[in-house]
Amino acid sequence: MIEWSEEDLMIRDAVRGWIDAEVRPNLDALDSGELPPYDLLRSLYKTFGMDEMARSSFQARIAKEREGGGEKDAGKKDGDSGGNAAMTMLPVIELCKVAPGMVSAMGVGLGLAAGTIMKRGTPDQKERWALPLLTMEKVGAWAITEPNSGSDAFGGMQATAKKAGDEYVINGSKTFITNGPYADTIVFYCKLDDGRDPRDREILTFVLDRGMEGLEQSKPLRKMGLHSSPTGELFLNDVRAGADRLLSSGSQGGKESAKQNFVTERAGVAAMALGVIEECLKLSVEYAKTRELWGQRIGDFQLIQLKLAKMEVARLNVQNLVFRHVEMQRSGRTPTLAEASAMKLYAAQAASEVAQEAVQLFGGNGYMSEYRVEQLARDAKSFQIYAGTDEIQVTHIARDLLSR
Image 1 (cartoon, rainbow, N blue to C red):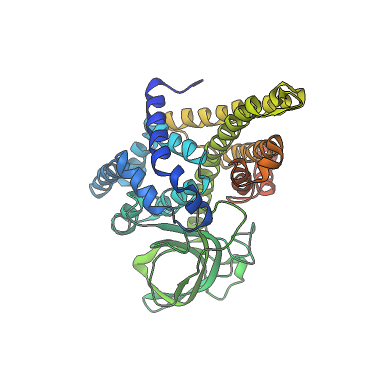
Image 2 (tube, one colour):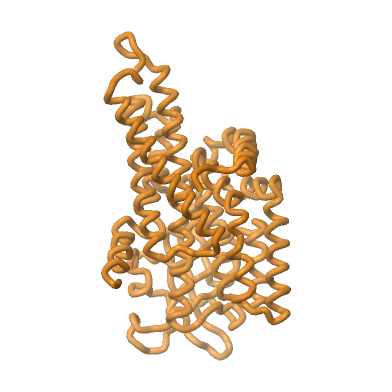
């Protein structure tokens, strides 16, 4: 794949039209945190029939599972979703040109929260919790990061679940949780408190609902960027969860579901980065053509031309990563963790560098909120931190190379 098809471009233009009408007029409210993104995301889903597509696909999958096709067979059809790869990628790219945080909020609810339930849940659990997330009827959160664990997500995990009769009693806290303040459904990772050394304990995954006794969701945290993606903390004090809320048991089950989600999330960052790069390049070219100094447009100066040329190189490289991922989806192949980490590492660094160069090209204007490169530079920096820092991506890539 070397370019978008005509059908892809029609989808792109339709999404752009919706963004121009619905999102751009609300940018100030989104970036101030005054307007949560969820109603706009629901509008996107309804406008393009994505909610009905999700419902139809879900019902077909569950019917096959209940007939005895099993998770493995049911997943094959979903793996074939590469045919709809453009419908998945293009809204991500186009939204990231305007409000990358909206994509984070959407991706966590759909890809991580619903994705975990769809991979690890029973048909009843999927119908109860996953379907409302897949149709955007409800908001989902995926809770793994803790204040004292950071990149050591599993080893340093301190949240626990203790068996109490037919239930589990869950205690602990999570931080930096996307959608945390507004989540209706929370996929929560913790360790089984069975008396063993904490680092050796099994990882359990529960589905929790807003309003459960002992569950507190904080107000949105203040942060550098991605203001259109609410981030918060979760506090659990003796939250009682029945076995019907347990998705996976055993250290491998919990860890594997998380690792699969890391692959999805990290590969998706490449599409997010492409949106930021394309928008920064477009704004920079327009500015270089119209801004004049010393009697000529700044685009005639070689240093400015160098900045633009490097932005275009980054755009081409990240676009090729996105196209490769689309082709992998269409062929039914999932990237390895190392491949997804490589995509994220390069794309995140490229987006952050391009956005910073755009601010520099705009000079004093670039530091003003009126000129949108300021917001995009703040938002792009997050790509190098969430879903695993640059440093963590390096370790995953290197370990894979050294294990061959």
